[in-house]
Image 1 (cartoon, rainbow, N blue to C red):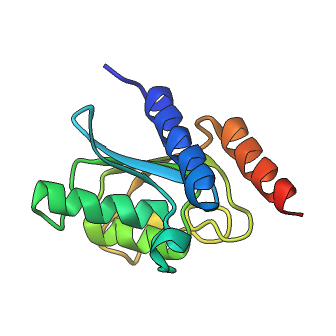
Image 2 (cartoon, helix red, strand yellow; image 1 turned 90 degrees about the horizontal axis):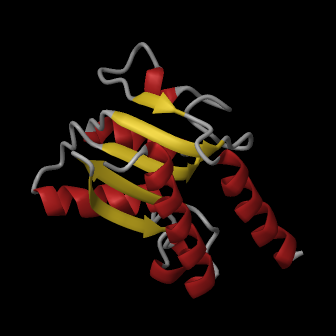
Length: 150
């Protein structure tokens, strides 16, 4: 049985691969249901020429196709960085059960840093969120990526 740490390490692997393959911002995500990976990806905004191709959106789309349902109840989404408002909104629409993420995003995080979309009382679905899982590794990966670009 894999743990949150194991799955987050796999998300970090996806982040590294996205940066190495296409120069993408190193963010990785995966969707897990019943301890099985349904989908995994890194950011693909550059590769796909798509501003919505954040890692979270990519894995939500792939999971919906794989499970033949746009509702992804019962799944956990793992991502290396706190999701933005677009990704958090997609998680609400997909009705995911749980989010586990690494580093907080003080510039645009929509779980707790800038906004609190997943727990907003006016929305009809709430997502359980766990933060800080391998946060140091997630932050270091992003910092080294941006430092190399300066």
